[in-house]
Length: 480
Image 1 (cartoon, rainbow, N blue to C red):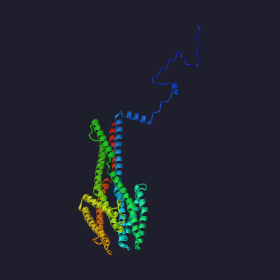
Image 2 (image 1 turned 90 degrees about the horizontal axis):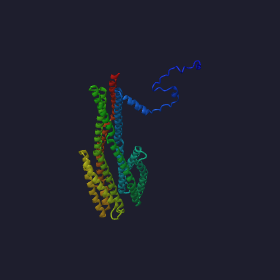
Image 3 (image 1 turned 180 degrees about the vertical axis):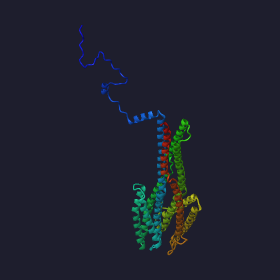
Image 4 (image 1 turned 120 degrees about the vertical axis):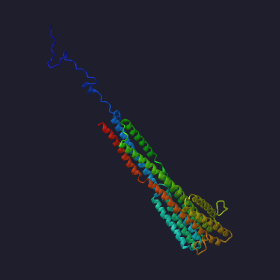
Protein backbone atom coordinates (compact mmCIF):
# COMPACT_ATOMS: atom_id res chain seq x y z
CA UNK A 1 0.00 0.00 0.00
CA UNK A 2 1.18 3.45 -0.66
CA UNK A 3 1.92 5.70 2.30
CA UNK A 4 0.63 9.26 2.37
CA UNK A 5 3.23 11.90 1.88
CA UNK A 6 4.83 13.01 5.04
CA UNK A 7 4.31 16.60 6.17
CA UNK A 8 7.12 19.06 5.89
CA UNK A 9 9.46 19.35 8.80
CA UNK A 10 8.34 21.91 11.37
CA UNK A 11 4.75 21.99 10.15
CA UNK A 12 2.07 21.44 12.76
CA UNK A 13 0.41 18.12 12.81
CA UNK A 14 -3.11 19.07 11.86
CA UNK A 15 -4.31 15.57 12.00
CA UNK A 16 -3.27 14.93 15.57
CA UNK A 17 -3.20 18.43 17.15
CA UNK A 18 -6.29 19.08 19.24
CA UNK A 19 -8.33 22.22 18.50
CA UNK A 20 -8.11 25.01 21.10
CA UNK A 21 -11.35 25.62 22.90
CA UNK A 22 -13.03 28.98 22.27
CA UNK A 23 -13.52 31.12 25.38
CA UNK A 24 -16.89 32.92 25.44
CA UNK A 25 -16.51 36.63 24.84
CA UNK A 26 -12.89 36.20 23.59
CA UNK A 27 -12.23 37.89 20.30
CA UNK A 28 -9.45 36.65 18.13
CA UNK A 29 -6.47 38.87 17.49
CA UNK A 30 -7.24 39.00 13.80
CA UNK A 31 -10.81 40.01 14.46
CA UNK A 32 -9.72 42.56 17.04
CA UNK A 33 -7.30 44.16 14.63
CA UNK A 34 -9.93 44.76 12.03
CA UNK A 35 -12.84 45.74 14.40
CA UNK A 36 -14.05 49.36 14.77
CA UNK A 37 -13.35 51.06 18.18
CA UNK A 38 -16.31 51.47 20.55
CA UNK A 39 -18.03 54.89 20.41
CA UNK A 40 -16.65 57.53 22.79
CA UNK A 41 -18.86 58.44 25.76
CA UNK A 42 -19.55 62.05 26.73
CA UNK A 43 -18.66 63.58 30.08
CA UNK A 44 -22.33 63.82 31.03
CA UNK A 45 -22.96 60.19 30.26
CA UNK A 46 -19.82 59.15 32.13
CA UNK A 47 -20.77 61.21 35.16
CA UNK A 48 -24.28 59.82 35.13
CA UNK A 49 -22.89 56.29 35.03
CA UNK A 50 -20.58 57.06 37.96
CA UNK A 51 -23.48 58.43 39.98
CA UNK A 52 -25.61 55.43 39.13
CA UNK A 53 -22.91 53.06 40.30
CA UNK A 54 -22.29 55.15 43.46
CA UNK A 55 -25.98 55.15 44.32
CA UNK A 56 -26.00 51.37 44.52
CA UNK A 57 -23.98 51.41 47.75
CA UNK A 58 -24.62 53.19 51.03
CA UNK A 59 -21.22 54.97 51.09
CA UNK A 60 -21.87 56.23 47.59
CA UNK A 61 -25.30 57.47 48.56
CA UNK A 62 -23.83 59.24 51.58
CA UNK A 63 -21.23 60.99 49.43
CA UNK A 64 -23.93 62.23 47.06
CA UNK A 65 -26.07 63.38 49.98
CA UNK A 66 -23.14 65.23 51.55
CA UNK A 67 -22.39 67.05 48.30
CA UNK A 68 -26.04 68.04 47.86
CA UNK A 69 -26.34 69.32 51.44
CA UNK A 70 -23.11 71.32 51.18
CA UNK A 71 -24.21 72.90 47.89
CA UNK A 72 -27.65 73.80 49.26
CA UNK A 73 -26.29 75.45 52.40
CA UNK A 74 -23.55 77.22 50.44
CA UNK A 75 -26.13 78.44 47.89
CA UNK A 76 -28.30 79.75 50.74
CA UNK A 77 -25.41 81.80 52.14
CA UNK A 78 -24.45 83.12 48.70
CA UNK A 79 -27.96 84.09 47.60
CA UNK A 80 -28.80 85.61 50.98
CA UNK A 81 -25.57 87.61 50.96
CA UNK A 82 -26.14 88.91 47.42
CA UNK A 83 -29.75 89.90 48.03
CA UNK A 84 -28.90 91.51 51.35
CA UNK A 85 -26.08 93.47 49.69
CA UNK A 86 -28.49 94.66 47.00
CA UNK A 87 -31.06 95.81 49.59
CA UNK A 88 -28.34 97.50 51.65
CA UNK A 89 -27.07 99.41 48.62
CA UNK A 90 -30.59 100.59 47.77
CA UNK A 91 -31.23 101.67 51.37
CA UNK A 92 -27.93 103.56 51.45
CA UNK A 93 -28.87 105.25 48.16
CA UNK A 94 -32.15 106.40 49.74
CA UNK A 95 -30.28 108.02 52.64
CA UNK A 96 -27.14 109.26 50.92
CA UNK A 97 -28.11 109.97 47.32
CA UNK A 98 -31.76 109.87 46.24
CA UNK A 99 -33.35 111.84 49.06
CA UNK A 100 -30.59 114.50 49.24
CA UNK A 101 -30.83 114.99 45.47
CA UNK A 102 -34.61 115.31 45.72
CA UNK A 103 -34.18 117.89 48.50
CA UNK A 104 -31.56 119.75 46.45
CA UNK A 105 -33.90 119.83 43.44
CA UNK A 106 -36.62 121.34 45.64
CA UNK A 107 -34.08 123.87 46.96
CA UNK A 108 -33.12 124.81 43.39
CA UNK A 109 -36.76 125.51 42.61
CA UNK A 110 -37.17 127.46 45.82
CA UNK A 111 -34.05 129.57 45.15
CA UNK A 112 -35.12 130.41 41.60
CA UNK A 113 -38.68 131.29 42.61
CA UNK A 114 -37.47 133.37 45.56
CA UNK A 115 -34.98 135.21 43.34
CA UNK A 116 -37.79 136.12 40.93
CA UNK A 117 -40.07 137.24 43.75
CA UNK A 118 -37.30 139.25 45.43
CA UNK A 119 -36.34 140.95 42.16
CA UNK A 120 -39.95 142.03 41.59
CA UNK A 121 -40.21 143.34 45.17
CA UNK A 122 -36.98 145.30 44.76
CA UNK A 123 -38.25 146.73 41.51
CA UNK A 124 -41.40 147.95 43.24
CA UNK A 125 -39.32 149.77 45.88
CA UNK A 126 -38.38 152.43 43.32
CA UNK A 127 -35.46 153.37 41.12
CA UNK A 128 -32.95 152.48 43.84
CA UNK A 129 -33.27 148.83 44.82
CA UNK A 130 -32.77 148.19 48.57
CA UNK A 131 -29.40 146.62 49.39
CA UNK A 132 -31.07 143.87 51.40
CA UNK A 133 -33.26 142.94 48.46
CA UNK A 134 -30.31 142.82 46.06
CA UNK A 135 -28.26 140.71 48.48
CA UNK A 136 -31.11 138.22 48.84
CA UNK A 137 -31.48 138.00 45.07
CA UNK A 138 -27.75 137.39 44.59
CA UNK A 139 -27.76 134.80 47.36
CA UNK A 140 -30.63 132.92 45.72
CA UNK A 141 -28.89 132.77 42.34
CA UNK A 142 -25.63 131.67 43.97
CA UNK A 143 -27.47 128.90 45.86
CA UNK A 144 -29.19 127.69 42.69
CA UNK A 145 -25.88 127.64 40.79
CA UNK A 146 -24.09 125.76 43.56
CA UNK A 147 -26.84 123.13 43.86
CA UNK A 148 -26.90 122.66 40.08
CA UNK A 149 -23.18 121.89 40.12
CA UNK A 150 -23.70 119.44 43.00
CA UNK A 151 -26.63 117.76 41.24
CA UNK A 152 -24.67 117.45 37.99
CA UNK A 153 -21.86 115.66 39.84
CA UNK A 154 -24.26 113.10 41.34
CA UNK A 155 -26.50 112.22 38.39
CA UNK A 156 -25.95 109.96 35.42
CA UNK A 157 -25.06 111.93 32.30
CA UNK A 158 -27.67 110.12 30.20
CA UNK A 159 -30.76 110.45 32.36
CA UNK A 160 -33.56 112.98 32.46
CA UNK A 161 -32.12 114.85 35.42
CA UNK A 162 -28.92 115.63 33.51
CA UNK A 163 -30.93 117.12 30.64
CA UNK A 164 -32.85 119.40 32.98
CA UNK A 165 -29.65 120.46 34.76
CA UNK A 166 -28.09 121.34 31.41
CA UNK A 167 -31.16 123.37 30.46
CA UNK A 168 -31.11 125.24 33.76
CA UNK A 169 -27.42 126.02 33.44
CA UNK A 170 -28.11 127.53 30.01
CA UNK A 171 -31.24 129.48 30.99
CA UNK A 172 -30.08 130.92 34.32
CA UNK A 173 -27.48 133.35 32.85
CA UNK A 174 -30.08 134.49 30.31
CA UNK A 175 -32.57 135.25 33.07
CA UNK A 176 -29.94 137.10 35.10
CA UNK A 177 -29.05 139.21 32.02
CA UNK A 178 -32.68 140.18 31.44
CA UNK A 179 -33.05 141.14 35.08
CA UNK A 180 -29.96 143.37 34.89
CA UNK A 181 -31.45 145.14 31.89
CA UNK A 182 -34.66 145.66 33.83
CA UNK A 183 -32.72 147.15 36.76
CA UNK A 184 -30.69 149.43 34.49
CA UNK A 185 -33.82 150.79 32.82
CA UNK A 186 -35.56 151.16 36.17
CA UNK A 187 -32.68 153.15 37.63
CA UNK A 188 -33.07 155.59 34.72
CA UNK A 189 -36.79 155.82 35.30
CA UNK A 190 -37.61 154.27 31.91
CA UNK A 191 -40.89 152.33 31.47
CA UNK A 192 -38.89 149.78 29.52
CA UNK A 193 -37.70 148.41 32.88
CA UNK A 194 -41.16 147.00 33.62
CA UNK A 195 -41.27 145.30 30.22
CA UNK A 196 -37.88 143.67 30.82
CA UNK A 197 -39.02 142.57 34.27
CA UNK A 198 -42.15 140.93 32.87
CA UNK A 199 -40.09 139.24 30.15
CA UNK A 200 -37.62 137.94 32.72
CA UNK A 201 -40.51 136.68 34.82
CA UNK A 202 -41.94 134.97 31.74
CA UNK A 203 -38.62 133.20 31.19
CA UNK A 204 -38.62 132.15 34.82
CA UNK A 205 -42.20 130.90 34.95
CA UNK A 206 -42.33 129.23 31.53
CA UNK A 207 -38.83 127.76 31.22
CA UNK A 208 -36.67 127.79 34.35
CA UNK A 209 -39.24 126.85 36.96
CA UNK A 210 -40.81 124.08 34.81
CA UNK A 211 -37.31 122.65 34.23
CA UNK A 212 -36.63 122.81 37.97
CA UNK A 213 -39.99 121.18 38.65
CA UNK A 214 -39.21 118.35 36.20
CA UNK A 215 -35.83 117.91 37.88
CA UNK A 216 -37.55 117.64 41.25
CA UNK A 217 -40.06 115.13 39.84
CA UNK A 218 -37.28 113.01 38.30
CA UNK A 219 -35.25 112.92 41.52
CA UNK A 220 -38.36 112.16 43.57
CA UNK A 221 -39.18 109.28 41.19
CA UNK A 222 -35.61 108.01 41.62
CA UNK A 223 -36.10 108.18 45.39
CA UNK A 224 -39.27 106.11 45.12
CA UNK A 225 -37.51 103.50 42.96
CA UNK A 226 -34.62 103.15 45.39
CA UNK A 227 -37.07 102.94 48.28
CA UNK A 228 -39.08 100.19 46.55
CA UNK A 229 -35.93 98.22 45.78
CA UNK A 230 -34.73 98.49 49.37
CA UNK A 231 -38.13 97.36 50.70
CA UNK A 232 -38.45 94.33 48.37
CA UNK A 233 -38.54 90.96 50.14
CA UNK A 234 -35.61 88.59 49.34
CA UNK A 235 -37.89 85.82 48.06
CA UNK A 236 -35.10 83.87 46.34
CA UNK A 237 -33.00 83.67 49.49
CA UNK A 238 -36.01 82.78 51.63
CA UNK A 239 -36.91 80.00 49.21
CA UNK A 240 -33.34 78.69 49.20
CA UNK A 241 -33.36 78.69 53.01
CA UNK A 242 -36.61 76.75 53.21
CA UNK A 243 -35.27 74.17 50.73
CA UNK A 244 -31.95 73.77 52.55
CA UNK A 245 -33.66 73.33 55.92
CA UNK A 246 -36.11 70.82 54.48
CA UNK A 247 -33.36 68.67 52.97
CA UNK A 248 -31.28 68.86 56.16
CA UNK A 249 -34.21 67.70 58.31
CA UNK A 250 -34.89 64.86 55.88
CA UNK A 251 -31.21 63.80 55.89
CA UNK A 252 -31.08 63.67 59.69
CA UNK A 253 -34.33 61.73 59.85
CA UNK A 254 -32.91 59.29 57.31
CA UNK A 255 -29.75 58.83 59.41
CA UNK A 256 -31.82 58.27 62.55
CA UNK A 257 -33.95 55.62 60.88
CA UNK A 258 -30.90 53.76 59.56
CA UNK A 259 -28.55 54.08 62.55
CA UNK A 260 -30.75 55.01 65.54
CA UNK A 261 -28.47 58.02 66.17
CA UNK A 262 -30.48 60.99 67.36
CA UNK A 263 -27.95 63.71 66.49
CA UNK A 264 -25.19 64.27 63.98
CA UNK A 265 -23.08 67.17 65.16
CA UNK A 266 -22.06 68.22 61.68
CA UNK A 267 -25.59 68.13 60.27
CA UNK A 268 -26.91 69.80 63.40
CA UNK A 269 -24.37 72.63 62.90
CA UNK A 270 -25.38 72.97 59.25
CA UNK A 271 -29.05 73.15 60.27
CA UNK A 272 -28.33 75.77 62.92
CA UNK A 273 -26.30 77.88 60.46
CA UNK A 274 -29.06 77.70 57.83
CA UNK A 275 -31.75 78.55 60.36
CA UNK A 276 -29.70 81.49 61.66
CA UNK A 277 -29.23 82.85 58.13
CA UNK A 278 -32.95 82.53 57.47
CA UNK A 279 -33.99 84.19 60.74
CA UNK A 280 -31.40 86.97 60.38
CA UNK A 281 -32.49 87.61 56.80
CA UNK A 282 -36.19 87.74 57.64
CA UNK A 283 -35.70 89.80 60.82
CA UNK A 284 -33.34 92.34 59.27
CA UNK A 285 -35.63 92.90 56.29
CA UNK A 286 -38.66 93.23 58.55
CA UNK A 287 -36.91 95.94 60.56
CA UNK A 288 -35.57 97.63 57.41
CA UNK A 289 -39.00 97.63 55.76
CA UNK A 290 -40.54 99.11 58.90
CA UNK A 291 -37.90 101.85 59.03
CA UNK A 292 -38.23 102.71 55.36
CA UNK A 293 -42.02 102.59 55.64
CA UNK A 294 -41.90 105.04 58.52
CA UNK A 295 -39.48 107.23 56.59
CA UNK A 296 -41.85 107.25 53.63
CA UNK A 297 -45.08 107.95 55.50
CA UNK A 298 -43.77 110.22 58.26
CA UNK A 299 -40.94 111.91 56.40
CA UNK A 300 -40.96 111.52 52.65
CA UNK A 301 -44.63 112.29 52.09
CA UNK A 302 -44.50 115.21 54.51
CA UNK A 303 -41.38 116.58 52.82
CA UNK A 304 -43.07 116.39 49.44
CA UNK A 305 -46.15 118.24 50.71
CA UNK A 306 -44.01 120.88 52.44
CA UNK A 307 -42.01 121.44 49.28
CA UNK A 308 -45.25 121.82 47.33
CA UNK A 309 -46.48 124.32 49.92
CA UNK A 310 -43.28 126.34 49.74
CA UNK A 311 -43.29 126.37 45.95
CA UNK A 312 -46.91 127.50 45.91
CA UNK A 313 -46.19 130.31 48.37
CA UNK A 314 -43.25 131.52 46.27
CA UNK A 315 -45.33 131.50 43.11
CA UNK A 316 -48.08 133.42 44.88
CA UNK A 317 -45.63 136.03 46.19
CA UNK A 318 -44.05 136.55 42.76
CA UNK A 319 -47.46 137.00 41.15
CA UNK A 320 -48.53 139.36 43.95
CA UNK A 321 -45.55 141.62 43.23
CA UNK A 322 -46.07 141.44 39.47
CA UNK A 323 -49.69 142.48 39.94
CA UNK A 324 -48.37 145.81 41.22
CA UNK A 325 -45.79 146.08 38.44
CA UNK A 326 -48.19 145.32 35.56
CA UNK A 327 -51.15 147.32 37.03
CA UNK A 328 -53.65 145.27 35.04
CA UNK A 329 -51.73 145.42 31.76
CA UNK A 330 -51.52 141.61 31.48
CA UNK A 331 -54.84 139.78 31.34
CA UNK A 332 -55.96 136.17 31.36
CA UNK A 333 -56.65 134.37 28.09
CA UNK A 334 -60.34 135.31 28.20
CA UNK A 335 -59.36 138.99 28.68
CA UNK A 336 -61.56 139.43 31.73
CA UNK A 337 -59.18 139.28 34.70
CA UNK A 338 -55.70 140.30 35.76
CA UNK A 339 -53.40 137.38 34.89
CA UNK A 340 -51.08 137.78 37.86
CA UNK A 341 -53.93 138.20 40.33
CA UNK A 342 -55.58 135.01 39.07
CA UNK A 343 -52.30 133.10 39.39
CA UNK A 344 -51.82 134.53 42.89
CA UNK A 345 -55.21 133.10 43.88
CA UNK A 346 -54.29 129.72 42.39
CA UNK A 347 -51.01 129.66 44.31
CA UNK A 348 -52.65 130.52 47.61
CA UNK A 349 -55.29 127.82 47.14
CA UNK A 350 -52.53 125.26 46.51
CA UNK A 351 -50.64 126.53 49.58
CA UNK A 352 -53.69 126.20 51.82
CA UNK A 353 -54.41 122.66 50.58
CA UNK A 354 -50.78 121.49 51.01
CA UNK A 355 -50.61 122.93 54.54
CA UNK A 356 -53.83 121.16 55.53
CA UNK A 357 -52.57 117.79 54.23
CA UNK A 358 -49.14 118.21 55.82
CA UNK A 359 -50.77 119.05 59.16
CA UNK A 360 -52.76 115.83 59.04
CA UNK A 361 -49.56 113.85 58.46
CA UNK A 362 -47.63 115.52 61.31
CA UNK A 363 -47.31 113.02 64.16
CA UNK A 364 -45.81 115.17 66.92
CA UNK A 365 -46.03 118.68 68.29
CA UNK A 366 -42.64 119.65 66.88
CA UNK A 367 -43.99 118.95 63.41
CA UNK A 368 -47.43 120.49 63.92
CA UNK A 369 -46.33 123.76 65.54
CA UNK A 370 -44.63 125.35 62.49
CA UNK A 371 -47.48 124.19 60.26
CA UNK A 372 -50.04 125.80 62.54
CA UNK A 373 -48.08 129.03 62.40
CA UNK A 374 -47.71 128.83 58.62
CA UNK A 375 -51.45 128.33 58.25
CA UNK A 376 -52.22 131.34 60.43
CA UNK A 377 -49.69 133.54 58.59
CA UNK A 378 -51.04 132.43 55.22
CA UNK A 379 -54.53 133.47 56.28
CA UNK A 380 -53.13 136.82 57.47
CA UNK A 381 -51.31 137.21 54.15
CA UNK A 382 -54.53 136.71 52.21
CA UNK A 383 -56.32 139.31 54.34
CA UNK A 384 -53.58 141.90 53.75
CA UNK A 385 -53.51 141.15 50.06
CA UNK A 386 -57.28 141.64 49.86
CA UNK A 387 -56.91 145.00 51.62
CA UNK A 388 -54.22 146.04 49.15
CA UNK A 389 -56.43 145.04 46.22
CA UNK A 390 -59.24 147.23 47.53
CA UNK A 391 -56.91 150.22 47.72
CA UNK A 392 -55.59 149.52 44.22
CA UNK A 393 -59.04 149.24 42.70
CA UNK A 394 -59.96 152.51 44.43
CA UNK A 395 -57.04 154.21 42.65
CA UNK A 396 -54.70 154.41 45.66
CA UNK A 397 -51.69 152.72 44.04
CA UNK A 398 -49.19 153.89 46.65
CA UNK A 399 -51.41 152.71 49.50
CA UNK A 400 -51.75 149.31 47.86
CA UNK A 401 -47.98 149.14 47.31
CA UNK A 402 -47.33 149.97 50.96
CA UNK A 403 -49.60 147.10 52.00
CA UNK A 404 -47.68 144.71 49.71
CA UNK A 405 -44.03 145.62 50.39
CA UNK A 406 -44.26 148.18 53.19
CA UNK A 407 -43.62 151.96 53.07
CA UNK A 408 -40.34 153.19 51.62
CA UNK A 409 -37.47 153.19 54.06
CA UNK A 410 -38.77 150.14 55.92
CA UNK A 411 -37.83 146.50 55.58
CA UNK A 412 -41.29 144.94 55.15
CA UNK A 413 -43.00 146.02 58.41
CA UNK A 414 -45.21 143.62 60.27
CA UNK A 415 -48.40 145.00 58.75
CA UNK A 416 -47.39 144.21 55.13
CA UNK A 417 -48.19 141.15 53.02
CA UNK A 418 -44.47 140.71 52.41
CA UNK A 419 -43.83 140.24 56.12
CA UNK A 420 -46.59 137.61 56.32
CA UNK A 421 -45.05 135.79 53.34
CA UNK A 422 -41.64 135.77 55.05
CA UNK A 423 -43.22 134.27 58.17
CA UNK A 424 -44.90 131.55 56.11
CA UNK A 425 -41.60 130.76 54.40
CA UNK A 426 -39.69 130.65 57.70
CA UNK A 427 -42.28 128.37 59.30
CA UNK A 428 -42.16 126.03 56.31
CA UNK A 429 -38.37 125.95 56.53
CA UNK A 430 -38.57 124.85 60.17
CA UNK A 431 -41.13 122.19 59.31
CA UNK A 432 -38.93 120.92 56.48
CA UNK A 433 -35.91 120.68 58.79
CA UNK A 434 -37.95 118.66 61.32
CA UNK A 435 -39.33 116.25 58.73
CA UNK A 436 -35.91 115.88 57.14
CA UNK A 437 -34.49 114.86 60.50
CA UNK A 438 -37.25 112.32 61.00
CA UNK A 439 -36.80 110.88 57.52
CA UNK A 440 -33.03 110.54 57.90
CA UNK A 441 -33.35 108.89 61.31
CA UNK A 442 -35.89 106.30 60.14
CA UNK A 443 -34.04 105.53 56.91
CA UNK A 444 -30.70 105.30 58.71
CA UNK A 445 -32.25 102.75 61.08
CA UNK A 446 -33.15 100.63 58.05
CA UNK A 447 -29.56 100.74 56.80
CA UNK A 448 -28.26 99.79 60.24
CA UNK A 449 -30.61 96.79 60.36
CA UNK A 450 -29.05 95.40 57.17
CA UNK A 451 -25.45 96.16 58.15
CA UNK A 452 -23.32 93.04 58.42
CA UNK A 453 -25.95 90.76 56.89
CA UNK A 454 -24.23 90.22 53.48
CA UNK A 455 -20.92 89.08 54.96
CA UNK A 456 -22.60 87.28 57.86
CA UNK A 457 -24.87 85.26 55.57
CA UNK A 458 -21.98 84.25 53.33
CA UNK A 459 -19.83 83.21 56.33
CA UNK A 460 -22.65 81.21 57.90
CA UNK A 461 -23.32 79.50 54.57
CA UNK A 462 -19.69 78.44 54.29
CA UNK A 463 -19.64 77.16 57.89
CA UNK A 464 -22.90 75.30 57.36
CA UNK A 465 -21.56 73.62 54.21
CA UNK A 466 -18.45 72.57 56.12
CA UNK A 467 -20.59 71.15 58.91
CA UNK A 468 -22.65 69.13 56.41
CA UNK A 469 -19.52 67.66 54.85
CA UNK A 470 -18.01 66.77 58.26
CA UNK A 471 -21.25 65.22 59.41
CA UNK A 472 -21.47 62.94 56.39
CA UNK A 473 -17.74 62.10 56.54
CA UNK A 474 -18.19 60.96 60.16
CA UNK A 475 -20.80 58.51 58.95
CA UNK A 476 -18.60 57.38 56.06
CA UNK A 477 -15.72 56.62 58.40
CA UNK A 478 -17.75 53.76 59.80
CA UNK A 479 -17.50 51.95 56.47
CA UNK A 480 -13.70 52.03 56.32
